[in-house]
Amino acid sequence: MPSTKTSTILTGDRPTGPLHLGHYFGTLANRVRLQREGGDLFVLVADYQVLTDRDVADRLPEHVEGLVADYLSVGIDPDRATIFRHSAVPALNQLMLPFLSLVSVGELRRNPTVKDEISVSGQATVSGLMFTYPVHQAADILFCKADLVPVGRDQLPHQEIARLVARRFNERYGPVFPVPDALLSDAPLLLGTDGRKMSKSRGNAIALSAGPDEVARLVKRAKTDAEREITYEPETRPEVSNLVRIAALCQDRDPHAVAAEIGSGGAAALKKTVVDSVNEFLRPIRARRAGLDRGELRRVLDRGNERANEVAGRTLAEVRAAMAMG
Ligand code: TRP
Image 1 (cartoon, rainbow, N blue to C red):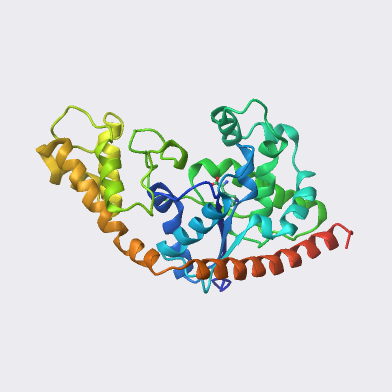
Image 2: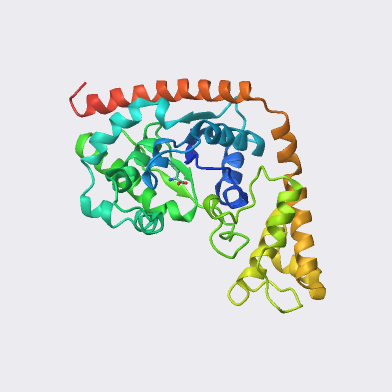
């Protein structure tokens, strides 16, 4: 008999700036879809995690509010989702200690995403939080017994640690946690307008909150190549293909068809198509954002924090009981 249990979905973002198109097609679209299908959705504003690659969390209140606005504007239903933040749920930190005892220093050191973040952060020293935050992230995922975690590809090493912690905890202390699966989107990775990874901090990202002028400005300075005929060939023409891909994702069409339609129109026609498709795609998102006010954002977060605390408190009690610390 098929299981009737609804899935529990957890995912989150660091409040370091506005979410962009890469986030949308990489994970936000999956969150909205899973919620529409009846899943119990938890969305985390990962504020402690901001401190992994920088000394202070800059403009935190603004970024936290901005994330909540991004979530609601893409269609996450605040009446059914639990939107909450790390710093409001102390039980997450309490779960982290026993979880740390379940992983080795070698396993933490080998994490390729952490290695990559260390190399790009440019910090003179590497903090203990940098090496251990994937275990905190395991607590993010396991406290609500999530079974599905929609994330970008770069998060897979962290997901492995969450799965490892769940398995080892269950082996050592008895069955408490489901082993959560990552859910990758089938949309290919989006590059920024400079041809490098789309990233809030690189100034190459089209934010979901960008207005039409900003979209035009970013696309205008995007790299292309000298060939007039527009084609979709990611291997040999990465920049042009990336622009085609952005337009295709926004139009929900096949990139080859989008490229063929532009044909010999060259870079100018390609850019016009991208600007128009992005603006059309953002239209309902902008409309929803315009209807939000700060009071509502705060209420959504307060309610989410409260529910996350209840759930985390229950899980912590189970963990302590399983460890004979209750
Ligand atoms: N590390 C994630 C990122 O940088 C954010 C995050 C924190 C997260 N906790 C999580 C993602 C739990 C998924 C599940 O994007």
